[in-house]
Length: 139
Image (tube, rainbow, N blue to C red; front, side):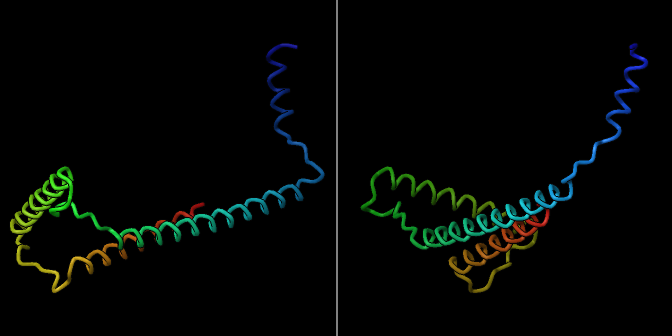
């Protein structure tokens, strides 16, 4: 058999796929397994997110660094001073940037740092929830 005869014969053989007797049953079984694993995965990811969120909120409420206190170790005081100076530098840079844009007098009212923290945390949680929803729709 020459190559000219062999190639068309192979193409003809593979062009027709044989029908299996249990093809509909197999397809239904695969669909059932796919849907079951999606539900389990969604439940596991949701549970992990809730547990992680609860732990993160609990830990953020208990933050107590005392890096700049007089009883802190020398390294802790140095780190505290470094963080404070970096914070002042960042605040100065942001203030100068806002004043260049004409937004130097913009204030957020009488909100304290904890209120701003919760607003930012709520925004991040909403963003994460939107991402999870989009991901669950794609998968």
